[in-house]
Length: 92
Image (tube, rainbow, N blue to C red; front, side):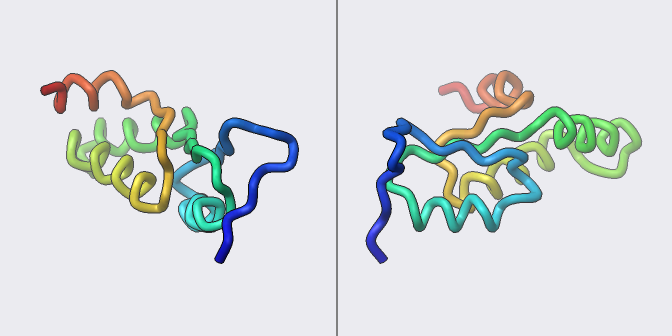
């Protein structure tokens, strides 16, 4: 399938919210020939933080898994409230 250019001349396409729209990210990756950004919105961040605080999910594992899922769906870049923590853990 040939990728389409965005007619309006956009430099990138952004999908938000990211986690519930992994399928949309995948379809956008297949369709558009520009950078693809995904925004893990505050509601997603809050949901994960609440589950971590209650001991239902393990941090940083769940954070890494959520970001990896977005990346595997096709996002080139991810905007997330977890960015600083993630960068601190994996800074080389």
